Length: 395
Ligand SMILES: [Zn+2]
Image 1: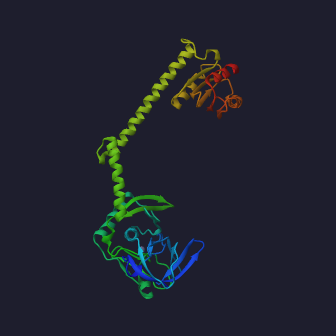
Image 2 (image 1 turned 180 degrees about the horizontal axis):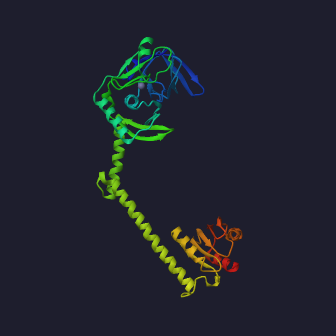
Image 3 (image 1 turned 30 degrees about the vertical axis):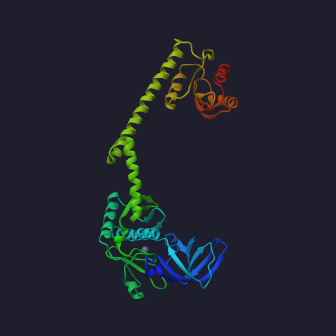
């Protein structure tokens, strides 16, 4: 059985230990090493394993099996050898900031709303907590405010191993039928919970608790949190983004959202204007063809009206076909694109069954598409000249 040094001192960075077992693990592709004592906290409880080095060599993973903590390494160590273990303390400290923050938030949520934390995940960037209830934005803000009051109060984070009788009387979270001694972690006034992970010694070490998102999740709420240095990183990332947007829009940093809304309105107005211009242009073209004021480009098409354009708004194009099909005996069609890249087409007709028409048309121009007998759309590839001739022969 390995002595768990992280239980005695969560801030221990280095330790000397004796190698008890060193066995090749085929599945892991590593040596599984058991020490008589260790400060490496294994993976578990929604938290990933500590990283660090033993004898200057990287520890790839740490797992708990039964009473043993197994360190996985690429290099063999000799049983009986005394080795130096060093954990990656900045990473461990960050995890303790997040984890202790989670205790405070879950304790407050339980006290105010009676919800349980039913899922906890401490990832390398974010922490998520799943609660079996929902919150308003104001309630999340209130929890965050009170959690940070717990931080500024710089409270002692206590660890106790109460007797069976004491446990029965004690109100605490994560109450399960546990065999052996139960480790109770207390943040006075905020949370009492059975937990075996390392925590900061005083709440002041957490620095800051930020709840950055709360979204509906499986009938409850998934709250995303960052604490301490991670919150600082999150602040930097957001600040850089806001400053960049502010520069791009020539708006003050706290007025960027308003500036984006203005920009969106302007884009929409531009789109509306462009649509109207295109619509007017197409009306004009249609008049020219039907009035015979100017010979139609495709006069030889007889009863058809065909228009070729590089690019146009799809709705304006559809409206052209919709109007044009009532003004000719054959097919009214619009082709958007060019000979090289192909065309997107919309065809309309009062007389011709276009779904029937498409069968041969698609074969001839390797096309795709479909629609109703009166109106179809799709894509074709081929030369404009050939397309025009095709319609001319057909009708
Ligand atoms: Zn804990």
